[in-house]
Length: 317
Image (cartoon, rainbow, N blue to C red; front, side):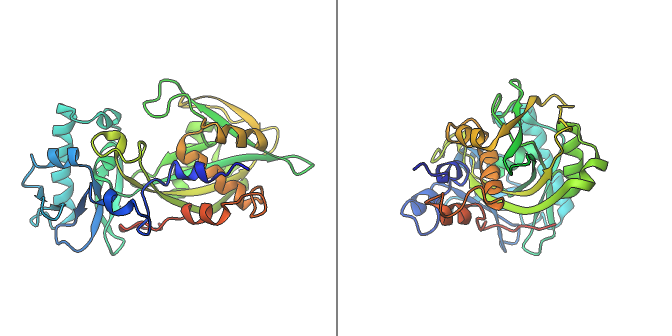
């Protein structure tokens, strides 16, 4: 019997402390810490650290402890943001990383241990610094008179810089400053699927969240494919009527197809979905009793890995 655990392992990649690979994995990384050394913010790859060495007034690199600290003088949110802006502008000009080609002039909020904003940072820089990123994912589904489920599945445009041509959740998007989860849902649902707020208010339900520790290319510590990304996704469901057909407004998707859940499962096993979208769909299946302990031999581990503790400050909004 096939297990959907393999779908989850594609997105929750970083070893756990009890696993034999954990120590060697962590020893390959540097830890980004606050200006006062009171908390950690993320994990860094050595190629990123080597670039940060060029900004000694912003970052202090300690190779003996493999820690990178914000300079003690950067003791306010505003000072940190100004310093990071200068780093970002230099990187934007020199392009030391492919990730920066996705520059959006959109910022994510990074929090301190008291759940207060520590700084806001350009979205495309966040994976490089290994900080916690947040997003929303929305499952638009139809349930027929026999209780059979189908999901509205878009195919990502072939010219998208990330995961072109792959299958996606009905709607998804990053949590950019200053929007909260629900505001982001409203905005993204119109931009990606043409769904109006008036329609959403009648049918939208908040369904919790998932969290995971991602690497696009597991155990790669020398390229951007190995950037270590802790992520939190807020999950929403919309039970849609059969007359409403989502359609792309911003052209980030090619089209939408109402896909029976059994076909969704097959395509999950075939690796056709963007990695974190696969995890969101497995979570959907669990919540709607489409995946049960009787049907899934790794049910417990799947549930645990969908809600991973992240060793950095987070905020629940």
